[in-house]
Image (cartoon, rainbow, N blue to C red; front, side):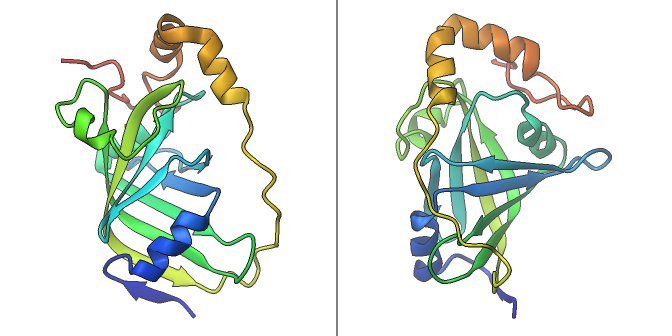
Length: 182
């Protein structure tokens, strides 16, 4: 049975801290829904109504474009080990980039990783739990190192060139604001 909360309880925050994977979902007003798996210990609970994740350079930048277009963001956790549980966080997203005035404070909870491009913050409006009885059990074996190795090999200039070519607009043509440094 689904339950709704107005904020993250300490129990739910503890559940999040144990998870190795989460999913970020967003969509523009018109266009494709995006659902991205995330991991690598990049998620942080910043309080009962605010969470954030360190966003690394990837093949697209859909979440950033969608948040800029309408702000909507959902983050989901599933328990793949132990007691079953699905946790969804609904709210308004905010993207913080290295040139933003709040970057130096916002980056503090994170370990800076090669390929870091931005921080995605979720200002929580609603929290939902559901049973997760249909979610299979899986065993965590570790993080993949390919993304970190790729970003390290690219270097700062190579990452900037890649982001300029691949991360400027969503697949539906919405601007991401990634290179919009003031």
